Length: 500
Image 1 (cartoon, rainbow, N blue to C red):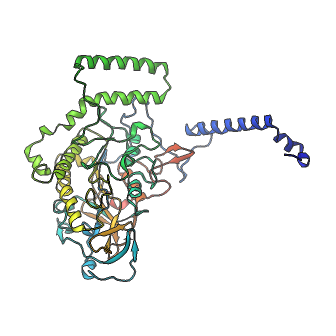
Image 2 (cartoon, rainbow, N blue to C red):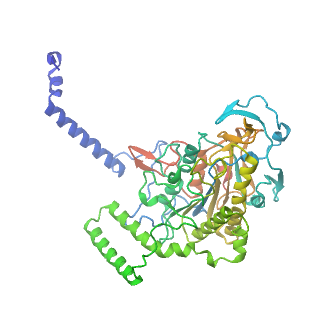
Image 3 (tube, helix red, strand yellow):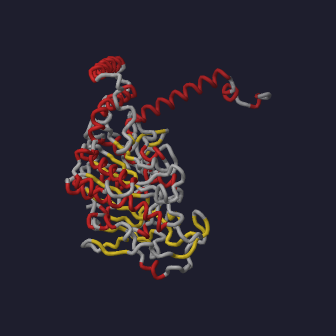
């Protein structure tokens, strides 16, 4: 500054380079220390969430990051199976019966948008499949899903879901991570971070991808985000086991075991030299789990012990190749739950090249053909999986979630053969531990266009899933970039009406 004379003596001192650097260094150190103390909960004032509650952070032993941990409160559900259907299943063609659509078929009533996600809208279209009442509850389900229809008395439907986006990548992110952006932990990661797992020989969180590949958001759907890497989902399916588990043919079993023993001794010695290094302990635990998986994964993937009646019930034989592979994935999901894996996420549909109803449920054209194709793959194996888990007693302690990212419009697109994205209303269902049976919560309007009665946001949905697992969504947090982050951000309420 050329003319500092008008500044006070104190102001002139602030322009001194050494004084500035000294002050800045002390300030930065103070801020850093405060941040470290706050992250460890050592400041005099208690750390609080945005809702004014004290966070509940799991006490994790770095040497045993997967060790089973107590929930915040006791609930029946100890494990969770998420059946996720990328592409947006049409609620008005499956579980959300709207008689008005039959009356208004081919018409264009006022009040509905002229343009939607992919362009101009067409006329109202009645469901492409007839609806029939099912079970003692008389629940109306379309003929598209005859196998799941037989089990409606065990299901708890949520008909008033709505979301914040009409794009698939953001929709998948929102449903599975609580945020439309990438980089946030998935639901399965939050659960395993909080609860660990019962089986120490298998991953705490397994993602079983569709035979056709990953969904649109890829590994973000089961990623760990900013949580420790130990809590990301391990992805494999019945056709493709995890990579690099097989012992090289040039290495004998004896040599392999000797190598493992040596590595364990070296790791233990190294860890003893750095007892406070949680990252080191976590890496060692991860490598040790990989070693255990060399034995446990081939065993859980071996379907040869399944009875012929089970193979037939799941539809492994007699259908398309895709149905057969998905059916095997369903059997694998059940076996993982039986082994005590905390979270299993089973995908029905992928999106390696845009989907458009061929690789997933995204039916912008020829919905009669494309939805029928996806239903042929999904319906029987999924129904068999739920029925099999029920008869084995697994639903007594397992929550099952059937979900998609949004719904589809009650009217056709301008092409006249498909339905566009509908973020305003869609349907998911729950079954198993902790939820009501033969129950429907909320409702969309008479067209199935917008959630109208007891609307449920994605935040509410995820808050409820965490509650069913014994976790308080407002207090399960992870300190990241100065914020107490959580799955539901700063939103969400538990849907009490669906709790058993």
